[in-house]
Amino acid sequence: MNVTVRTALMSATLAAATALVHAETSASTHYSKSEIKRMEREAHSMQQYRALAIYFSAQKTSFELQAQSEKEEWERRSQDVTGAAAKYPRPVDSSRNRFEYFSYEADQMNQQAAKYQALAEKSQQ
Image (cartoon, rainbow, N blue to C red; front, side, top):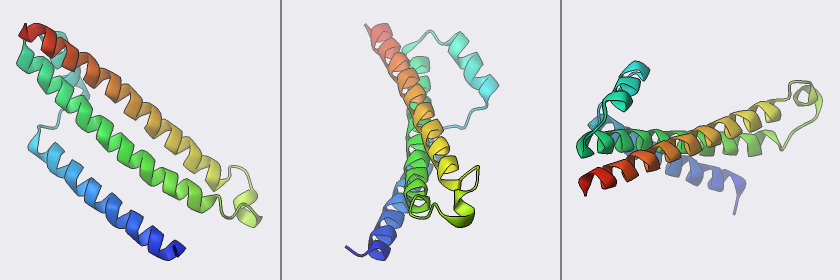
């Protein structure tokens, strides 16, 4: 498949997924870091745990989309590592680091979502 066509298809898919995540997070409330910390301290009911699980799950999805986008950029930048692109810090290294960061954050959000989902199920019993 032609690289341009593949890139266009991947961009369209990413745009659709981003719109879906934006719709999900728009439906849910946006919280500040201090609000999340307060909610974590005060959570004792199934609804509170479930709200935290939903929030962290939405965050995980957002980080996964950012990681996917950065992976595509990493692949694009790795095509040319000569000339100006070979000087330190190389753009390809920057993209790799950002991909690893977003992947790590997605894993952290997944762990938090799983933790609060388990607590919600436990408190339901």
